[in-house]
Image: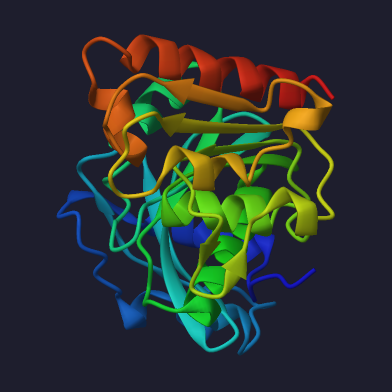
Length: 257
């Protein structure tokens, strides 16, 4: 398992010092992570910096820029508790894309991390996922479930085993994206999995998302009768409650072990 180069003392300092209530764009403050912040701080630990937290996320959200290899990802962490949930955005999406769901999950007692994709391509995508999971671990959530939409859905399903996920929910995931293969037939992940797709999705065909699920092992695929894609399913007046309930139910099952 690859992890980002951060440790608990520095993460705690960065989370306490992060600036909340600013714009949604990650604004990295390179001076915020001074090696003098802690006597045990190393050069690699200094790769994590405090950044401005977005106003779109729940009150109290803190944000950090986390380095994983050569890629730095802006990660926002909200809520508390030992059960962590990563919300991976769609292609080109940022950490505000899941704002409504993040607030809901925080209200449900989860510690939530979401992020902005640092760049396109597999290397950046995988690094972003590792950084988000590592931030949750270091913030106090030893167990983590992964939730993603579209591109994010592909990554959460494909990387679940590597990242030690206790559960996965993927909304409208392409079975293949940026060279990442999320098809269940090629996956070693055997934990709880739910794939949600819109029947008339024009961006990613429902049949393609179905390839990410494991229908032979139980109800791991849910098709919603609408044309919305990814997070848009959570904004549909007639179906948002159903989709939200399905996500909640799967997370409950995942953390129940």
